[in-house]
Image (cartoon, rainbow, N blue to C red; front, side, top):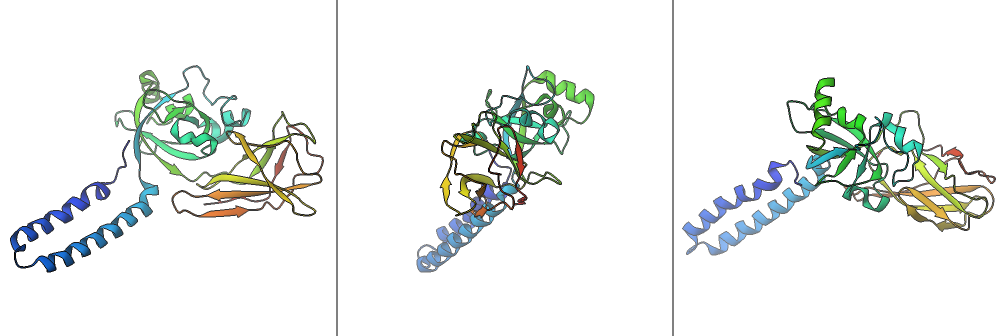
Length: 286
């Protein structure tokens, strides 16, 4: 896999060749001057590397993608992120399993623009997908739903041709998720057992940051405990605090290095029930 970025790969060579020529001509009489020039070059190169890293969130990465061969048009209800039916239908069914991008569950809910490379069949825009499962194929980063795989194509006929290929070369990049008119929502897992065992996932997270930690707090005294990620996007505790509960969610951005704790406006009620959903009243955009 490689980034589509000429400047990152070629510019250092283009800069250093003239310096080497300069040194070979003047090395006998201008060594101190050359050392100054070399120091200047290293400084410029460091600045360029920082600039490249700062803009690399826009870079496309080359890989391959397949699709669920035995699925219907949308995703699976038994994905490794623990979303259930939500994981099959979110984003209109434009969802995907990921291999390395799954990141032990941290990647669940992340959004990517994926576009195939063959101009005969593929559109320039491609398709935006949400990671809802873990899976891998032959040198693939994505296993898309059939719907998402076909939506990389220019036309319906081209989509059929892509599906016949099964595995295609693609390029992808992380993009911001968007759920208009939705706040981050707490979905209590059906396996929860009030009040002894609480498990939940977080739905409709916008932006392009990851939820890397969750604290569960008693609303009355604000005493908090750090939860464990059970698997995928599911957070659990075997000793839930009493009374109404509030969450603190840590959002981390790998590109900017920023980390921010977000506290929902709405609480989880004291008598929470397995299978219920609760609107947090907050949303993020970065």
